[in-house]
Image (cartoon, rainbow, N blue to C red; front, side, top):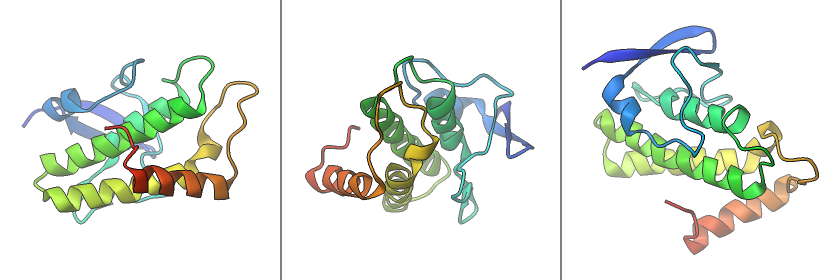
Length: 150
């Protein structure tokens, strides 16, 4: 196990295995470089029953703050959230979690960020974020209809 990359998560230096970092999916703008500073999984735990989740959240923070293209839209945010879900599942599976556990935790975090995360996303000028109730209905509809990418 090679602990090669360090990130500042909530002011604490955390290391991630180089092999795992290579497997994580990032958006078209790539992944944050070593030393990137963020708050991890924001208002959700960075750990789940002794397993860390924060590498997926580092990429998600990057997507929300620095890695988005100019003119970011609602669809760009949806894609960033889908990447979070896939990356969370991959991080948990990498640490030995069952497929059911990894999927359940990933869906839980995905639902939370779809409903509550819009306030932290920098939309393009003129792009109006949906209300919280509209975001809840959108997240439920995407989940129910199986239209979530990935």
